[in-house]
Image 1: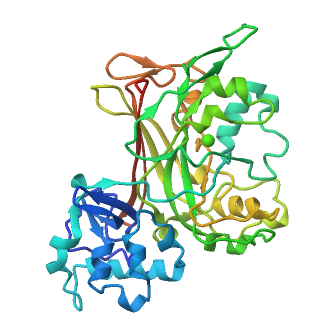
Image 2: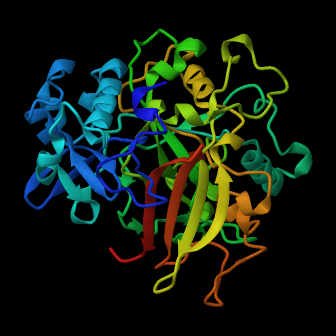
Image 3: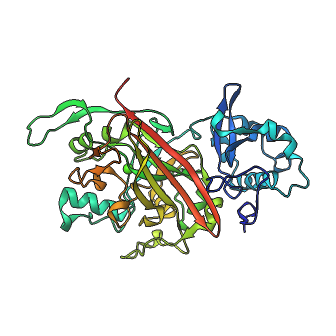
Length: 422
Ligand code: CA
């Protein structure tokens, strides 16, 4: 077992019941305060732990890592140290925060390296190079296909043979809490012959998760599926905001463009593959059997419970979707392997999102498009109002967590409030 995953570990830092951040998680992020420049951190209970201060005090000295990586505004250089070292840092953090401290005198340092979470600003943790969005939920692809092409032709002939994806826009990926501006664009009104221009009227979210590439490849080479996870540093929550009216008019024949590229929201924490190990599960049975380069051994999916809340202005948050990462038909190893099979190189900090994660039941659909079935079944909110799509002033909150054998680790939140003000 990975040392930091030991379910019997407890921390001398108080971890409230139901916290996303017990000692078994130790995700990585980047924070700043009015007095401190951006630097790397982990999360424990309701605190962030400053890795720059810990490194300055020698806590990572024997791990032979350049101290400068902990003082960066992004995790990229830290990730580039390689999994052996980043895993060792996580295990070391678990020793430093363990309530059975022996060699360490970290409790005296607590005042220097721990900050209450509500007193820090979490930053975009990764400088994203390229962003790819997959389309790996069979339920989502079937729902959308049924709406636009009818039930007979819902899944395209290639869908069960390869993880379909497209190259997205990295520049507009923002961290949780960043306001989301309702995009302008061309739309074609029902039965009209010519498009009109204006703000999207069909603003939507997409419940997704993303993984971050942790090991690069050279152009012309491809990653064997047995080694695919070695190239993945960790995972985060991802909301791929979508303007359905802009998307519908522009996407034929090439695919998504301005209907998607205006914004995507990520959670500030990257939960490592190490931390996710105890929560491995098999994914759905794949029939037909994929081609040999996509065939997997063992459990390549994860049991991650997902929830989306909608919070109208001045109202409490209401859950509108409950899904699970394990519903995805294509897993992250298959996605990464397929991405490189043509010789396309990948780089540290590249982000690859799952595609909308819809489950089998209508309450597990991962977008308004599906939840309201194109607006035909509006969602009722507790204040008596209803939603077909997202209104200005609405906040969408994506949450995710894993729970097993008394241990619960979470991803924090990917939150964004939609508005039209500049
Ligand atoms: Ca998407």
